[in-house]
Length: 436
Image 1 (cartoon, rainbow, N blue to C red):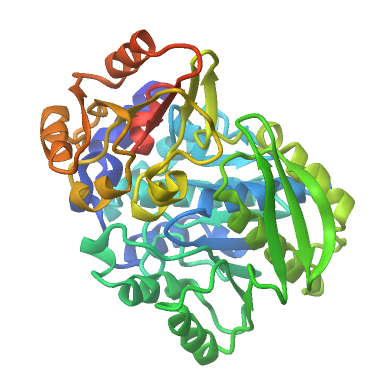
Image 2: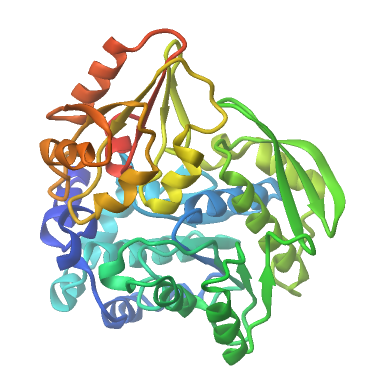
């Protein structure tokens, strides 16, 4: 098979959650353990950082990765899902895994794949571990896909575990309360491995404390005045500046960070705490991560790591922004008080789509009721029908028209907007993927 034929095989022959939803979800680690055993257990040959959480995993992973690259390390980064190119999932120092590596891996392991019957995600995780081990990365940053306890990535024993935050998402798999969801995410906490918690949420913090105590895992709370306090000074589409305090003392004043959106302050604090913990582990990286390295990593983040889809500017006059926020907490961060944060505008045009297994009645209350909506369906089997989406939105006071594709919805928004307006594409990673 050539590269395209290999992708077609991965997408169509193996169960893929992003396309088909619940049918692709596996409830145990049996397949990934069998696959990795056949590969010589590559996950045991690399040093890792493991991230879980409802929101912020990707941003935090890229923040950490960019700083470690600035320190001169060879850094593997595994994230999911991808936007345009499958290879976005597996990167070393911002460079995608070569196509020939993907083709060769699938070709070489056809027998095991047919015998074990893994999901698309399980194959992808195994490929990432195999590639990072073969390339002898200094460290690999591994993001969970869904949950934590039963996620295919959860066969690693990392240097540090990180849980960013907890919100409602994928309740059909993870539970219908925040403590239940937190318990699934807490499944990445390992024996004697330090864990960084991004946010102290009253409903769930005790879940993490209990799990960490049971595992004798040192627990660190990132965004806390006793550790890090990250204050947004100015946020625009092009630049964000933060004052960072450590133990109440200003560590950096108006530090430029090449990642945008007011919600990133928490992710920055989580990344900094994780780097501190890494520094404290003997023989983990063999070098100190100081403030000059942090500044360089934060400044060069997008270029260094090929960071996509988060508060990404696509045009000016009108200002066009793509943003991957898709669940309740994510949309609340983008639209505090049902208004777009930190970006002035005359009129707000929102190109919005989501997936069919999403309870839209729980996300619509966070969207601005003074915006003009363009309801669209992502070009995947799980895409929520645009007409039904519009009908549901009307019940929440949201007004707009339905369009048969994301591109048609965006084209209509461009036609109807003027200089001084803002066009925002959001609601699903799959919607954003079609326009970036």
